[in-house]
Image 1: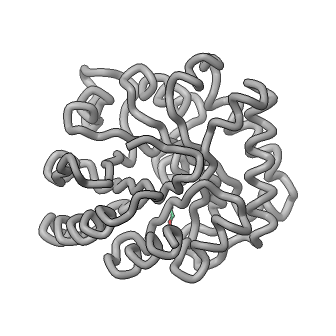
Image 2: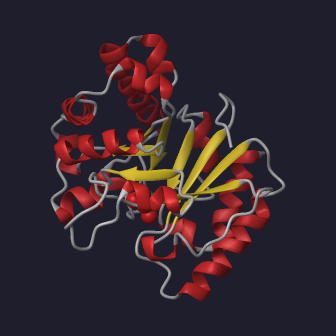
Length: 258
Ligand code: PGA
């Protein structure tokens, strides 16, 4: 599945949901069926890791699997962790890295995120890098500083060549918007996109920056999905809560596809 310039990307981050594998399979199959009809959309499902190898994708399915996290080492004594090689072996193509829930609840640092991006590139997995500010940082007008710090640190030791040779997505996820029902104004989403592109252009030049899709995540719903893409200028969406309800997620996909 190639991401062309006009192909919008919709990523479902199921987090630690649903409760059982039979519910997960039902949800997955419903979404998979819907995506077969669509050509201008790329859908990635990121279920809990336990189910990655069990959710089956066939050749004609227009859907891919993503992990919600991974370790940067390829094997060894790292209790509880999953390696990039294991993800490849389970036919996983994408990996969400640096989600704020991992940064805040599990102490994930920018340095760890950087090591994970390098490991993902080495193993031909596409990183989905999440960045974003807290409500405090927004109030103190520190969003720009947060973006700069998170992007500069995430891309340490990553060359222009690697960015061109691999795919990477950046998702703007304001922490205060996640699961809250609040989203930034569309103008602010557009400004965030431009800022991310500017920081990337500073690191790698405009041509390379242009190749990195920028997505939005945080309280995406059927109501706001299309406007976030059109008015916010985004290349796609990362959907949490609304992605574990088949009907709602399918309606988001349809809204973006039409
Ligand atoms: P939400 O989560 O859509 O439930 O706000 C988004 C995310 O955390 O990725």
